[in-house]
Every structure is written in C-alpha cells, then in structure tokens.
Length: 197
Image 1: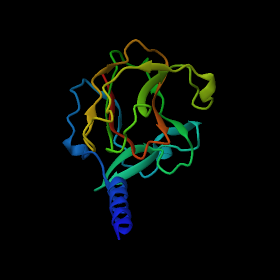
Image 2 (image 1 turned 90 degrees about the horizontal axis):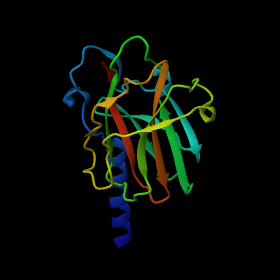
Image 3 (image 1 turned 60 degrees about the vertical axis):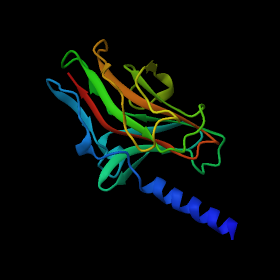
Image 4 (image 1 turned 90 degrees about the vertical axis):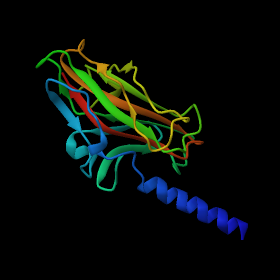
C-alpha cells in the first residue's frame, strides 16, 4: 500500500512537471528599447520552424518546445535519458550585428524544482564565426547572466539582466547550453528572449 502511494505521488509530480510553465508572456516586463530586432516567445510548436537549432554535444537529448496554458517556452531535461551526462545546446537564429549599434540581450529562465545537483547547469554563449551548420568548428564565448540555481524557487522566471552585445560585429549566434547528469530529474526552461538597442 505504501509503495502504491509513493508511485501515485511520483506520477502526479511528473504530470505537474510536464504541464507546468514559469509564467505567461503577458506577465513579462521587457526592458525599454529604441527597437527590438529579435523577439522569441517560443509559441510555435516546433523550434526549427523559427530558426532555432538544438545540438547534442554529449548524450542524445535535445531541447524541445513546451507549452502550458497557451504559453510556449524552450525546455531541456535529462530525465529518463538513460545516459550519465547530457550536454545540449539551443542555438538562436543569426543576428545581423552590423545593421545597428548598442545591441543588448534579455531573456528569462527557470528551473522546475527538481534540479538538485550543482553539476547541472545552464550557460549562455555567443559566436560570430558559427556558420549555422558546423558547430564544432565555431568558437563559442561564455557570457555572464543571472541564472536559476537549484535553490531558486521552482517555476519562477529569473531575469537574465541586460547583456551587452554591442562589441560584436558580423553575424552573431547566441546559445543556451545545459548540462544534465543522471541525478537531474528536472530541467530548465527559457522564454521571452529579446535582442534590442
């Protein structure tokens, strides 16, 4: 009887995980800007149709699109991957950095409350020599931002802060890199991405 109760609680928890989102797009205050040159709320059902790509660097798990109450987001979890480590990248569409000056990036991210290991992480990188195809031939520079940790309240967006991209020229890609270990039973979500000046 006790085992059945535990299994029922686990099942309900996992359903809540799948059906939960951080917050609706309409609840988000995006920083003021002269002009927004790129916006992504992940409301399309397929990441690839809006120009995003996912690359599995270690393991086979990829980013996917999720939705709760008609609010879309990009998500990643190693849950039930059967692999000790997964490292997956979500790569943006190209951004032309020569058409304007003073570009900045803003987004929100959250964790689902089941991220309990400091070896599990979300990071941000940028590249100006990625060709949109050959991931391993590109140079990726790590960029600092405010991110959710295992201590962050679950399903609550954390603002990235205003990330200055103005020193980059040419075609820029930015990417979210998540590392998940076998102890990761939850995941991360990203939403409300803006590039503006």
